Image (cartoon, rainbow, N blue to C red; front, side):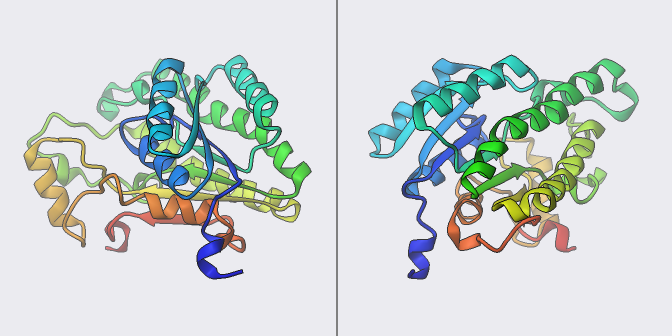
Length: 262
């Protein structure tokens, strides 16, 4: 097969949790749809996901919006049932959802309740959705899991870039993202002989109109001299979802402009 054809996702059914999100989610969904996949976006607001999917369809892509709440096992079961009833299978699972409202505050201000809720969503929720969909991939002897981690799952925060801002470095974010990387390796080893691959994408800092001093400090530190934008994560997602990466599993792909190379 010609190499460019191996990057095509035509005919693949892809689920992106938080796939209509304003940060990575929408970029991931759009990229996978552009590559030819049927993309299911799912998060707490079904209306928002249906609206986003309609926008993709207006561009000529195949997409549908569904509902999913991370940390709610029943929500995961309903999503699983809806996907299988509609499509009969799932080829690619992209875990982009995050309990964002549990993050924030200094180390000294973190609470037991924050970590408990974070654990229920980000740890137990990730486990549960994999337990639901991976058996389907095993039965078809092929599938790709892509977990969205972070540079802060590989290295610690750099306190210097936050100086002069009210931004904080929540320790539970680092804890969760590091755990996700090793959970990905576990899945890769556990299911490798069943045709199921598992990989991580670890993005660098995403530009989201942060304070100018933070952006300037970040840009000085990162080798490419700028923060990550919407287009920067697309190629990594398509590559790991496609047959072009068939022999790659257990990998943590750093999309960080060289941040972790320093």
